[in-house]
Picture 1 (tube, helix red, strand yellow):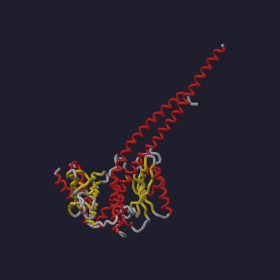
Picture 2: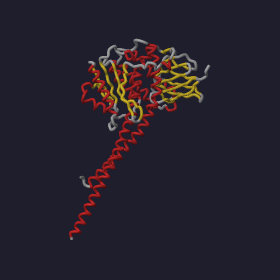
Picture 3: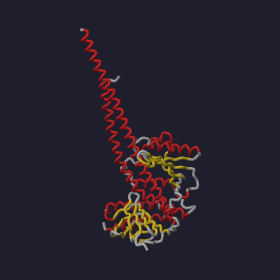
Picture 4: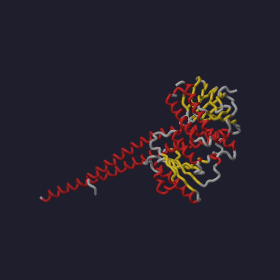
Length: 138
Length: 291
C-alpha cells in the first residue's frame, strides 16, 4: 500500500499546494472526512472550513470556502472557490466572508416564496463561517 | 516645400510621439508578463474542473439539469462579447467584434433571436451602431485594475439570472485566445448549455467509477453555475493577456514607423538646408561678379 498520495489545492486565482501527503482532512458536504491513500474514488462538495494536510514537512492548514474535492486512490484534488493559508488569514478576510454569507442569507430570506431550502442553506453557510472564525481564534 | 522651421518642428513632434509609443510598449510588456502569469495560475483549476465535469456529465448521461442539457430549444441566443476597456491595441477589439458580427448575421439569417451582452467598453462602442437595439446589458470593468475571480462571478451571476428567467436558450462568449505575443485568436465558446469536451475525462477518469457525496444531481447543480464562472474567468484572463500582447506589438510597429518617419524627415531637412546654403552662395557670388 502506498503511504502517500498526490495532493493538490487549487483556487481559480492560484495554485496553493501540490505535495505528497499522507493524510488530508477535508470539510465534506456531509461531514468532515480524513482522506488517506487508497481511498475509494469519490467526488464531494465542500463546506466552508479547514483543510488540514499532513505532508512530509509537517502539517499545514488552509481555510477554504465552498468548492469540491476529487478523490482517487493515488491523488486528491481540492478545488476551492477561495483558499487561504491559515497563517495569512486575517480578521478582515473573515469579516468579508461572513458579510458575504450574511448578505446571501438576507437575500434568501426575502425571496423565500419558492425555495425555503435556500434560507436553510444560507443560514448554514453563515453558521459555518462563524464557526470557522471561532476555530481559528481571530 | 515646407520651411526649415516647419520641418524641425515636425521632427520634434514625431520624436515625442516615438517616446510615447516606446513607453506604452514597455508598459504593455510588463503588464503582459503579469497577465500571462495570472492566466497560467488559473490553468490547473480550469483543467481539473473540466475533467471532473466531464466525469460527472458522463455518469449522468442524457437529461440532467438545464445548464447541461439545454432548454430544448435554440431560438434565443445570448452573445457575450468580451473586449478591452481601452484602445490602441491594434486589431484586438475589432477582431473580436468582427467575429461577433459574423455570428450575429449568421444567426439572424437563420431566423434566431439575438441578444448581446458586452463586457468592455470598446466592444460596446463597435457593436452599438449596428446592433444597438439587441443590447441587453453591459458590464463595466473600467474601474477594475486586476481581474479577479469575483468579477467573473459577477458576470456569471448576471448571465445565470437571465437564464433562469428564461431570457435565452444558448449563451456564447466571444474573447481572444492568447496564442503568443503576436498571435491572438478571436474565439467563440458556448457556455450554456455546457459543452463538455468529449474525451476530456477519458484519461482522468477512464474506468474510474466515482462515488458522489451528496449525490450526482446535487453536485451538478452546484458545479454547473460554477463552471460558467470558471469559463468566464479564464476567458477574461486570456483576453487580458491577448490585449497586452496586441498592444505591445501595435506599439512596437508604431515605434518603428515613427523611427522611419524621423529618418525621412531628417533627410528632407538636410536637403533643404543645403539648398538654402547653395542659394545664398549663388546670390553672394553673382552679386560679387556684378561689381
